[in-house]
Length: 514
Image: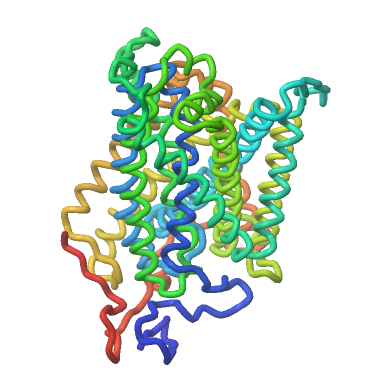
């Protein structure tokens, strides 16, 4: 039997707290842990975007070391987020909402900052992925389509039009409900696994693979090696840390605690394996100088050396992976904005689900933002540093939020409880991410991903979150301003679990001390 804030629900004794959420804002609980894992398959697809730039600039050995380090950090963070996910299983918005819960007794501004920092990072990436698809389509099938026209602020060509098309496709699939989007995720996830497996096995199956192609080139930028390493970890974290996106779908898991625990942790372990094996396989097959010249399309030739017709296969798989990323990103970003509105952190108009029980308005805002980026910015990488800045700040706030919850509510019910050593792990990770934010953001010129202008954009986006929060609280909700909230407000949002009744291999509460 499970108690949900005083309400008792009979039925499946193994179902976790909040498994019977009702109301206009409730999502349909149709997902299982393997759906969450499928969602996480989109993150290795992002590897094929950033890995080429890293290998070309700093060498394959350096890229492998930094990608592996970032992947391990992401995996550890997912374990920590699983505890908070178990505490707030009906909270929509994933780790940004955990930051809000952990910090609201100290500052009400953390929630808006975390949610908008998180949302902008995911939202702005849609344009980047769409343009990458357009570039691949043009290179493989329409090399003669070199026409352009100007919107006054940017030159638009064939890749931009393809990007607009896939943006609309991803949006349409999402607003029709989670199940249609999941079926396409299954299909594209299978395609993503083809190059992952092939490149992971390259040292065994490829005659072109050689350790002589692997280089340490961390001093190539002229900056100190430690600064170069942090600058690249800052950029790489933007995609690798994304495995936490599974947390945004927690309210939609059928067996909330069990599915959440398995999905988050399996995603973490999977990404560590992929981010170690694939860079090792790719790095030994290619020449660093050639990769630097074609950091995305070089995969086509590498795959061609593995299989006849491999360039076409790799193109299709890359496009499938990027499309998977776009579908997941739209779904994730929309849920973050929706959850933020439900918590009173942004304008209430975004806190509505459509008739398919998905946040159609919030996802439509994502579409509009990215159409503007494509048509009037042109090169979406121009805002990547702004997105990374807000995203990593969200991680810092989420990790420290975990520490605050352990300190403020030590006896609170935690259906997925980690051992005490994880408090120290969370503290170390929060320090590491803070260093990445400060040093990485100020060293963006090393990677070529941005500079002062992009940092200003990031600050403005975060500032906008505070303005919208003030408007929501003072104008829409007509409440008095509050800088912090009492601990009782957080306690009211916690799940309350009673021991499960009846037979079953698992209970709602899973104590973990390993």
